[in-house]
Image (cartoon, rainbow, N blue to C red):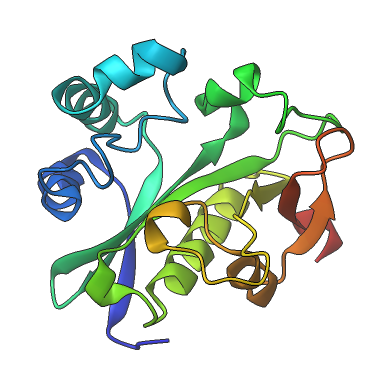
Length: 193
């Protein structure tokens, strides 16, 4: 990992850096990291891509309700990770594939964003470590992520926004299958460490 990387938990004064990092496309296709936070999906979410999502994320950041961390090198933002209590992300209430199944109120790592030039330099690893520390400090019983599985092929970065299994496994997460959907979940329970 690049020793010049430092991680800062998101606070309202970070909005200009997060906005600069995401750029005109809102990180990816106008999402502005709102997919997991939107109380609805489908066509309504599609209609909010771009400026509506930017405004909603800005309101969440400025109110202190959006949790996440930014990675910096030399004062410049180079990466983002979104995390927080599962209840902060209405997506999970709609999802059959990632429905809660054991009653433990773990935090979740919902997505990463790194510009292409920053990939492969340990930025995601540093961001994941920051998410783990934030969850632990908040008293969460654990944290989990939902990486995309490469299935023997390299995954295009645009489709790896939830991370890849190796990222989580290197950080000590345990990989398991959701009991009904068989979706891969990577979980780190703090009581077991």
